[in-house]
Each structure stands twice: as structure tokens, then as C-alpha cells.
Image (cartoon, rainbow, N blue to C red; front, side):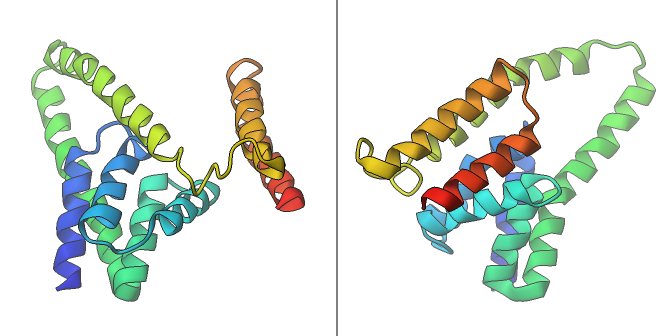
Length: 179
């Protein structure tokens, strides 16, 4: 039964999750924590951190992790495949449409219309990660370090175009030293 649930959850996320892995975070969180209770909020936050540090798309890494923790090796394969399946099918039909309608503006207008929805999903994912597990006891000693590191990493990446890999490593070192 768990395999059917994994298949259904990740096919659904694959269909509805436009905008990449970060846009899918809120969908994955809803299904994994709220609906099925496969993990806690703390475990989810840890899973997001690990998925960001490992190579590959965050959504695939998360699907693999959730599938493995709920259904073992077969669950990880199934969840990863289920997440990719809708994209594979959609890309197939979009390529056929592009080949048949070269120069048409239908697809361009459709993709422009999706941009605000994608931005909203990414913003919702960011808000969902601002919880007590990630920012505890604001204003008390060492816990301010999380906020300071977050703000400095944002400023360094947005305004100074700092290398994201160096920011991740530096943040990890700071976290290790402080906590």
C-alpha cells in the first residue's frame, strides 16, 4: 500500500509542481508532513538541508529520501520515477507541439502566465522554512547566528553575486562552530 501512496503523491507533485524543486517544497511538505505524516517538521527541515547539499535537483533528492525512509530502496526508486514521469510525458507532448507549430506564440504566452505562480510557490516554500526548527529563540545568544548567517548569505549572493558553493560551505562551517 505504501508504494501506491508514494506513486500517487509524487506523480501528483510532478504534475502540479511547476517552477522547479524550490517551488515543489510546499507541495512536498503538505503531502509528507500534513497529509500522510511520514515525517516531522524537524525531519523535513533536515531533509531540505541535505537535499540542497547533495548533487542533483532538490525535488529528486527529496523524493528519493522520502521514498527510502517510507519504502526502502524500492520506495526510493518509485518515488523518484513518479516525480519525473509527468515531466517526461509533458515534455514529449510539448516537443511534438513545437515541431508542429513552429513560430507559434501559444506556448510563449502560457509560460509567461506561469511566472507569477512559480514566484508565489517559491515564496511560499521560503516562508514554510521560517519555522521554529530553523530559527529558534530569536534574540537569545547563539540563535541570532542563524539569522545573521541567513541575511549575510542573501546579501552576498544577491548583491555581490558570491559563489553559492562557497556560501554553503561557509554557512556550514559557521553552523558547526557555533552549534
